[in-house]
Image (cartoon, rainbow, N blue to C red; front, top):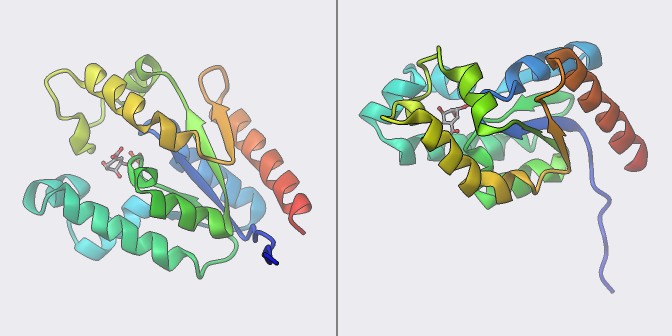
Length: 181
Ligand code: S3P
């Protein structure tokens, strides 16, 4: 007989493309829940002593993805944490499965045009240092769509303020916790 272990929802993980508001919404949610906020990019930068741009340039994307995967494995030991995941992190199926084992995984979504509008004046994202960044966003969104859609909950951020998105996220988190008690 198969024994089904009930899912533990100890944490909240936000996934989704760059510029969808994961960090801002994550901080708001962590404040309300009195949880710790953790951004996987911040942990990588602190450990490497290099910016994301420098890691990509000096060590390559594969090294960055390894660091990301190592952090995801460590997160299984955490409780009461809101995790903001780097945009490419869920493309590794192991990462997504691992997050789901302890967290409600919520994906924040926006169109390529909206994302471009939000990130166009920022320069800290190496994947957008491209001749045609909008096209690059469209392409990556298409490739990553199937992974993002594996989240427990998908929230469109386009017509909502980040505060409204945070309140939706919290609502979903409370419902999931009640359902998995
Ligand atoms: C990336 C997203 C970034 C950061 C890195 C790569 C991606 O995180 O991890 O630049 O592959 O989409 P944010 O989504 O927090 O900007």
